[in-house]
Length: 188
Image (cartoon, rainbow, N blue to C red):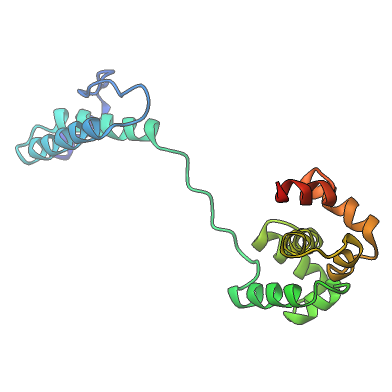
């Protein structure tokens, strides 16, 4: 029996391997059903001793699947902040937007070193801690502009910025327009 298997394994295979040509844009459900049927046929051929035909179908199926595999899924990110750490940071930032917030303060809040905190924060939230705080300051400024008639200088101080000019510069960087123009656009 092993001599027969060795002889079959050494024989050249037909180029189509007994399978239909693959679809042009990835395997469809109909094509996969056809492939499944052919594999079941190969299993029956193996049981009945038709080794060569079964081998051709099986090798063809393997070759087809090797060619039509989708790219491997990206690895899940490792590291980063835990959910509890993220929530604690976000709450702290929201409660203290009216004043300067340092990275050392945030790192100490979650019990991480300064450098690891910056790396983990970026990995978890997709931006640096400073960019996150700036974006939250702009969002707070928008909320204050919509909710009342506070002057921009007071809104700047409420958002932890030194003056109205700092608010205008930061607001324009994030929204593309000045706070006054944005406020006018919201009223109309």
